[in-house]
Amino acid sequence: MTKLIINADDFGYSKGVNLGIIEAFQNGVVTSTTLMANMPGAEHAAGLAKNNPGLGVGIHFVLTCGRPVSNEAASLVNSQGEFNRISAIEEDGIPEEIELELRSQFEKFISFGIIPTHIDSHHHVHSLPNVYPAVEKIARENQLPIRKVSSDPNPLQPVQYFNHEFYGDQLTTEYLLELLDKARPYETAELMTHPAFVDEQVYAGSSYALQRVRELTILTDPAVQTAITDKGIDLITFREVSIKSVV
Image (cartoon, rainbow, N blue to C red; front, side, top):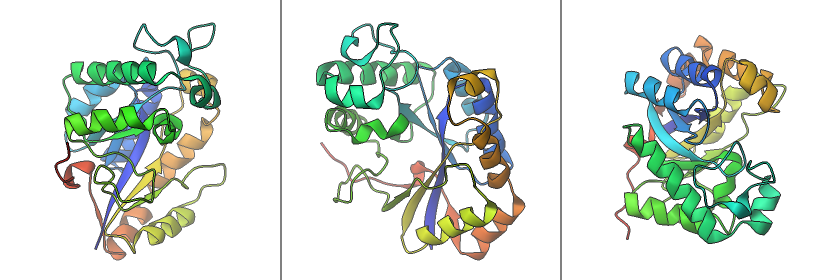
């Protein structure tokens, strides 16, 4: 039986995103989410997490959206003090400043009174060569799994298969069912999603806005839950994915 994590990214982006993710958890198939500690809706998200303890909540490290938590991130921001685009982070981001910023985000997450289940990142920045070492260091120190970014064996990336294809303008329930079939050959798998109710903040600030509502509709479609049961898929969180002790 495949054990599948359906993760909703961007928890904390805004209240609309937060409430959409909770809807997808309470009345849909989302089992896990990852929180953006630097964003305006982070504290609201943390409160919702405490009221929904069955939802796995990891940290969504951010280097390409909003503003840094640290005051020592000059190589990561533009002249307005906002995070740069991912290409600039890759080219100009100083590893020491990256690590300091990620640690600051991690500490802020912990300050909300919740313990992260795992680590991933906005725009997959943890896959960048100048970012991943800091992410792995934090993961090792806290014995946390990381979202899979490499086909190479890594005890800190214990989920065998990661799918990022549930994203775009033409999503349907049938397409999601196809993605579920892609996960079935693996013992453990993760599917990335971005459900939300669209509020002013996400509509004005994200290029991926109205599509999130469509994702929410599909993820709460009873036909999806029925298909998951029929396909013999077991929905889990990262709490159920063990990593071997690493130092």
